Length: 297
Image (cartoon, rainbow, N blue to C red; front, side, top):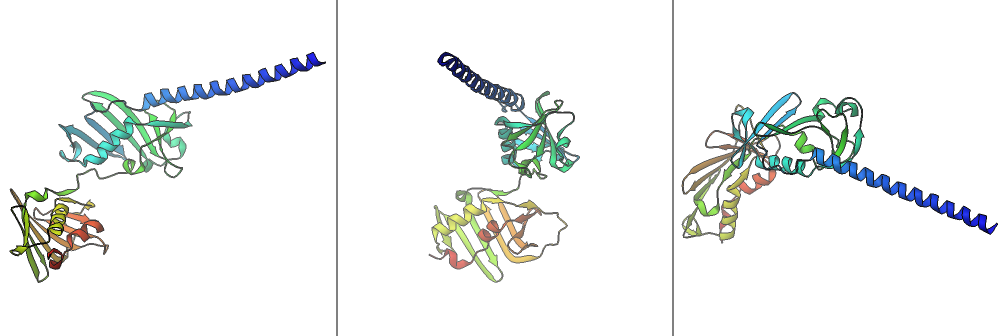
């Protein structure tokens, strides 16, 4: 009896050990498959990529790299916003598969995603196609994105591609002004009937010919030199001035900025001296709305 019990116990232990081994082998096999999927989806080195085609909602965007800068070739080679392009390439390079979402017939439509929730990306290095991906926004189901190699029916849930990048419609550079405070020679500020001038001489600021509050003047000049728009505004948009005009003279250029009323009270329109019209977020509106007393030491 003891001998039979011992054999039975050993058999049970062997079965349990086999089951544990099988589970571990299955997990390891799944991890190896996922690793192969990562290799097939991600691009290990994106430095050679110089052309990105984005097809979204029947609109095609062509981004080309010229030197170190990206331009929108499909819009006459105007400057692109460099940060989201860089982020997109980093996302593709770091692409990590979380799970398999669908394995059969078709494409991301099988997951119930509307056309506006799908984007096709083609990455090229010269004339060579490096990767073609169909990407779907899975934000409504959780984090990550649905990713599919075009021509492969398998759809994966992967990260870290963000929904903001997938749904982005405006890739233009929204820089309004770029200069350093050391480049500034003079800032004139007019707010209704109030007018004052900040002049920088020998690394010191003066307010209408008298010493100014240096920290406040430095910060104002830095904010002007790093001015970005929230979005572009159509030139035909009605512009109602807020009676705030800022003149900036640097070592080699002069600018004039005029603030105007925007539909939202915490935002503002801004018209530059070259006739362009921008929408400013609340943070930039606050930075540009000044009074003379702020610069008095």
